[in-house]
Length: 197
Image (cartoon, rainbow, N blue to C red; front, side, top):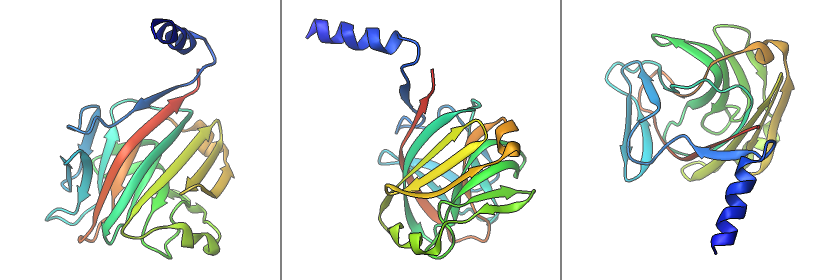
């Protein structure tokens, strides 16, 4: 057993071997910052985002910036479900600059890429792919960023892939969003990132 541990530790130290890290510890919001007045809290080991009394946009962003990565997370839409995962993004108050991989109710382009306060929709999934979204159940989203290429998957189905120079030049955090309008509740878990070595 000791030999196995030594081998695993040695492999982790080898350049070129990627390492997976959890961005959410299941206990509190360590490593994240809340932007806006909407609710972000931990309950039963899950990260919960919920509309607050102001019914405005809200964000929960990593304190660290991430450039190239492969992010996987699970989400469950309990009410409305209009949310998103921002990449290479910066936030000033509740104004975000960056790119959102959409998390939304059926028929609203989950997995598509939207540029807030910029060009708007850059790419939407084929409408036929909307059926892979499991409303009211846990869904697994994967986002891969490598240079100027962004690819998203939902429950194992590739939703979109886009190559864009502006995305390639972006720098910033990973951020979860809650949409304005109120009445939204989304749960999150198993937020893991793999960074290239």
